[in-house]
Length: 479
Image 1 (cartoon, one colour):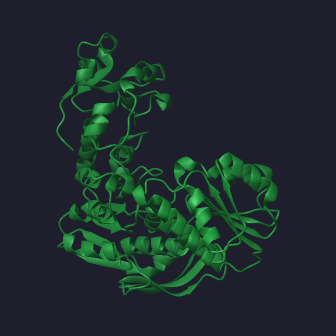
Image 2 (cartoon, helix red, strand yellow):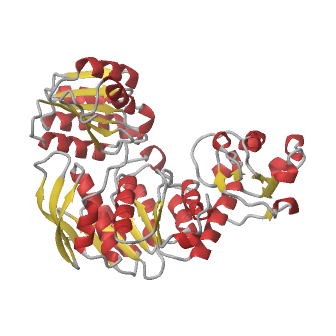
Image 3 (spheres, one colour):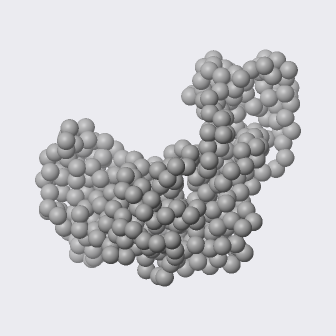
């Protein structure tokens, strides 16, 4: 994390901080605002160019922020900052100050942390894990949304001392730990909150634009296992060779989960005959139980096994785990099944995409049988895949066609390669749209009764606009 020096002003000592913010636009009364700027981002390994939030400190104060954390070199000899100096906490590195504060809160709390990483599935697995543990009696602190980087994780930890909460309100934390560059992001995260249980979901070709090779992705993900507390449990995907190689990174106990290969926590008697639900027998070292997961897709079954492995590491009985899995709900835009009154169904998986997760969802569509007339895939461009990106998109199109999908729409940029790949394999019912707005307009006019539609794409492609347009035009079943 790096050391940081903080200068405090006596006038602030009698003030009660109610929350913490890094966005002046959402600052509220009583908050401490962290003014992030380019030098801090660069030292913390973030990609891109960022605005200097020191320019927005006055705006944060106008919205009620109590004080702001500011970078020393940006305050010294700058008239705009000197006018606000009685409400500034001055540091050498604002991001390091945020992380140091979170580390101090964590140390004072001192209870177990579950850290979750992987190239896909982190947020869903975090939600599943937190749900199972909460249903089993744990008071769980969890990462909000997909807060999994050097800013999101400390802000998640600081929930313990925000909005009237106290550290003693929580028994355990479930935290996502992500990365997108070869700058040891996860190593810094585990320095803030060393995990007692570390989960490795999968290694896939994501962020290759910055990481170069899948081996580098694996090495950066392995930092979670390297950063486990002494004696911490590594929870590893037995069906992923690169994940299983991480076993050498720890001397502590290892618990595996999987379906294809032998594993400690696994599923048998898998029944996917009812779309949107997976019935299976959960097998663990502590016994077995029948579970009914109200989600769809083999990847979500794997995510549920990862959550079950965490619960098993904490000595929960399989009956409790299975009962909790029965009441989970998929996070929004991550495999949500939306049934419309007009007789069609949409699988909203529009939050993000990569070749592996796209094809996993397409397999799910291909296996659906009940009252399905057409299987439709709306596939947005997949970003940050590096120089092999065009070929990866085209190969995804090949596989989509081979799986028997009836209609394929590509949305934006390299999604035209998905369409081209499908056409190579003989799928004629294909279209390409330059934007999600165009695809949304077409969807409204062309959707039919009996359609099963998957909507997926990298976040900035905004394929969620397709789902939003359908929800605006057509009523959901039961409404």
